[in-house]
Length: 536
Image (cartoon, rainbow, N blue to C red; front, side, top):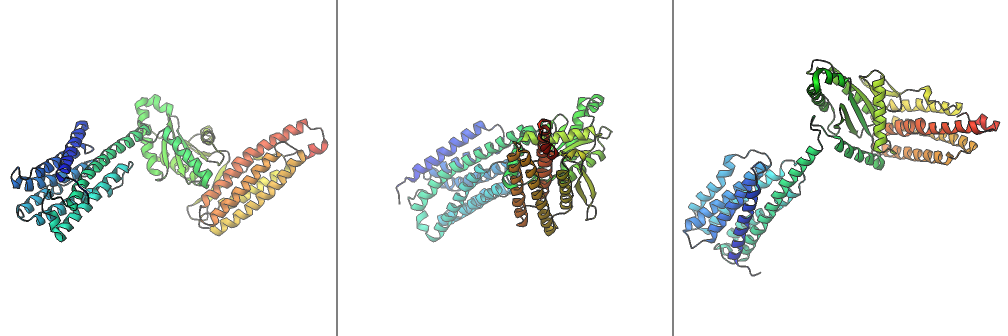
C-alpha cells in the first residue's frame, strides 16, 4: 500500500508522548483540570511503546507483558484525567482492573500472539469507550470544540482497536509480530501517532475553553451578590430587542429598588447592607423562571429581564415577587420591601429608551408610597378573571390622555374598552382572541382614518409622518394576527402590541405630539374655520 518503517513510527510515537508529557507536566500547577494525570498518561504511553520497541533486546516478558500492562495503565490514566476534568469520581476498580487483566491474560498467552492481540485490543477499546462516555454523557458548561476533537480522536482509536481484533481473528497472518510490515500494522501505529496529537490538543483546548468560560462568567457576575452584572444585562437586552424587531417576541424588564436602603446602611453599617443585598438575591432568584435573567444594575437596584413576556404577565410576576420579598423575614430582624417599575420593550426602542421607561415607572412607585408595582406610561388595575384565583389586568382611562377633540377622544375611549375586552381573554380562548382582535383592528383602522382626515384639513407638516406611523401599526397588527392564527406566537405578543405599540407608543406619545402641533396651530392660525376644526 505504502512504504513506512514500523520502527520509525514507534520512535515517533515515543518521542511525541514524552515531549507532550514534559510540556504539559511543566505547565500543570495542580491536577484540578486533570492536566497532571494526562501528562502521566502520556508518559506511561511512551514508556510502554519504548519497551515494545526493545523487543529482542530485553526479556520477552518485559517487552510483552510489562509493556502492554503499562499501555493499559496509560489508558486508565487518560480516564482519570478526563474524570478529574469533569469533576467526576473515578472508582479505583475502573483504573486498576484493565491493566491487571492485561497482565493476567498475557501471562497465560505468551505463546499465542493472536490471543494477546484480542485481549489487549479488546480491553483497550473498552477503556476508550469509557473515556468517551465520560466525555460525552454529561452536559458541558463551556464550549465543546476541544471535547469534540478529543472524542473524535478516541473514536478513531476505538475503531482501530476493534479492527485489530477482527484482523487477529480473521487474518492472523497480518499480525504475526510487533514490527511486521503489514498494512494493518502500518495503519495502526500511524493512527496511534495522529490520535495522540488530536487527543492532546483536544484536552488542552477543553481546559482552556473552560478556563476562559469561567473567567468570562466571573467578569459578568456581580462580586457581592453573585447575580449577573450590568455588562451581561446589556448584552441580554440587546438580544431581546433584536428578537422583538425580527420575530415580534415580547420582552419586559422589572426594575427593583430596595426601599429605605440608606437607613439600613446607616443603622446596620455597610456590612449589614451587603448582607441584605445578598439575602435579597437569595430570596428573589428562586422565584423567577429558568428563562428569566436577574442582575444587579447598581447600588440597591436590580434588574430582571423576562424574555417572551408581555406587560400583563410581567406585572403579575412583579407583584408576586414584591409580596414575596415583603413577607420574607430578613436576618437583620426587620421587614425589607421593594419598589418595582415594569416596562415592556417597543419595536422602536433603544435600550436607553426602554430602561428610561422602567426607571420612570420605578420613580412613580416610590413617589406613590413605595412597596408597590408601577408600569410605564399607562395605568393598570386588576379585576377577577374568569378562572378561579386568576386576575386580569385592565387599562385605566385617565383625563390626561385627552387630546381635546371630542371625536378623537371618544374613539380613544372606545379603543380602551375594546382593548380591555381583549386583555380579559387568554390562550385557551383562541377563537375569542381572534374575534376580539379583528374587532379591535377594525376600530383602530376607522380611528386612524378620521385622525388623518383631521390632519389633512389642517395641512400640518407632520400629517404624512403620522399617516406612515398608522400604516406601520396596521401592518404589524395584521402580521401579528396572522402569526397568532397559525400558532406561531401566543396571546402575550398580541397583548404586547395592544398595550405598547398602540397605547403607550402611539396614543400616549405620538398622539400627544400631534396635540401639541394642533395647539401651536391654534395659536398661530387666524382662520375661524381652522380654529373650529383644531380642537384635537
